[in-house]
Each structure stands twice: as C-alpha cells, then as structure tokens.
Length: 127
Image (tube, rainbow, N blue to C red; front, side, top):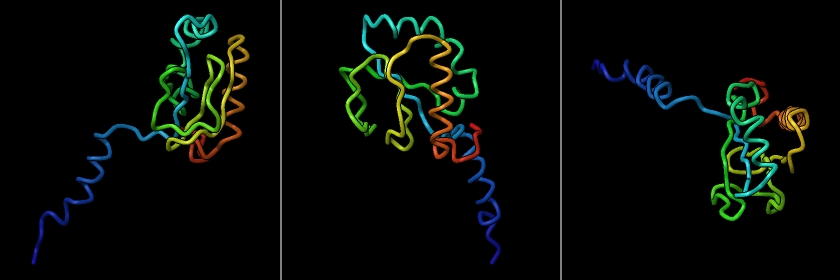
C-alpha cells in the first residue's frame, strides 16, 4: 500500500532540524559577579566581538552569576574567581580559564582551551 507520509518523513526530519537552529557542540560559561572590575573590562574589551569570532561560534557565551550557578552544569570544582570562563559540553565542564588580564591573555587561553578539547567541537574545529 502506498503511504505518502513515508516519503515525506526524511524531508520533515531535515526541515525540523533546520528550523530548530544550529546545534552547537559547547558553551563557554562566563561566571561573573556584580562589581567585578575584571568582568567589566572583559565586557568592554571582548563581549561585543566574541560572538562574531570563530571561538564565539564554536563555544557561544553563556553568563552565570557566581552566587547563582546554573543547575544544568557540572563543575569540576566551584568557581572562586571572577571572571571564570568554563568550557562546557553536554552540561559537563571540560576546562576553564580563571581570570582576565587582557585581550591577548583571553584569546590565547580560549584558543588553547578549545585546542585541548577537540570533543567540544566534535573534532571538526567548525561551529
């Protein structure tokens, strides 16, 4: 018996995946707190450009207050310093950067963090 839905199923599946938006491999969780001087510097120097970069596409930024950490992330240890940048995949911490000293410091360490955890990008290095 001919079932027209059987032919449409693969198309509907692909359409559903396309409409749900891009699936990303990882997040970069920025743990911050109100009044943090170094968080404010990061916001002024990096925040506006980060989403446009390769790193920002591989690990989109997600923010969390140090006093209200997300329940859906398993940290290896509680963050102590702000800012702390935690690379997370499937809710599990892969690695972190503690602190912010300068733009060069941040970009160097984010690049190193992503290179050390190819599983964060499914080994492709592509968003």
